[in-house]
Image 1 (cartoon, helix red, strand yellow):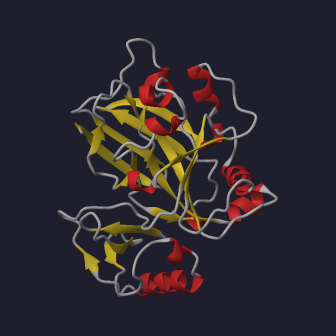
Image 2 (cartoon, one colour; image 1 turned 120 degrees about the vertical axis):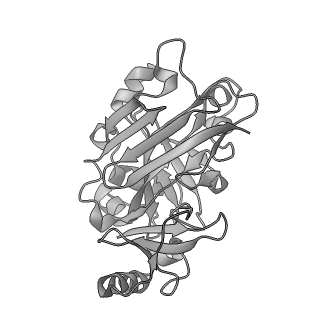
Image 3 (cartoon, one colour; image 1 turned 30 degrees about the vertical axis):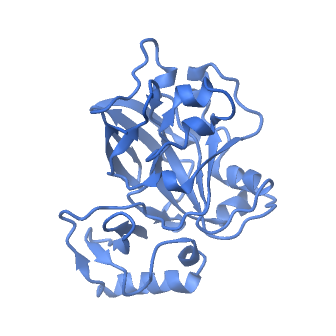
Length: 285
């Protein structure tokens, strides 16, 4: 299933992209798309039955904002330097264990919402990423297979980053990762049963129409199942938690000088095969 949330920010209602291409209202079936729903197999079965019945009300998408496809996100765990080609372009040694940092849940916006260039920013960068949404409580998992079994679904994430804040201002990466609007998510939460192999997805990103990133999850140093297993050894993952699994080569920080960092007026578009497409205009904060 392709689940989404539509409406004004803070007042989104649940919806479904039907197999026939129409947008259908789920608000009569479930209250929201969130961790509680993803952990409730009965509720997911009700959605499937309602979709198969063909009786869900059709929504007119004209003028209707698409919000993040997941509400009440718990935590966003991010994996750094998780693509061989990205490590090469930045001159970094591939890590021997996953690099973990966090984004606050309040960085999440819709896939077509405006993204703000922070005040004082000189190195705002783009990163297309596969987001993994947890559907079952995961603690001390033993295998990558167990890791995959705890995944509810997948989405497109844009891990917007300010590289000067991240790497030149002291401390951890968090200052360059948690600026307002720095995690567009969606348009859909695609349930895991529709993604046959998360290591067989293409990722692309364009800036002002120019292709910048053209990668594949097959290049991940630590595959999805291993990432979930590994993270579960250090913290408990709950339904509704999100893991951003890293970005392929093609980011601004890895480009030759002068590096083409983002400015107000730039338009970024990104997509992952089968998971949908995003578009954001950048404006000054």
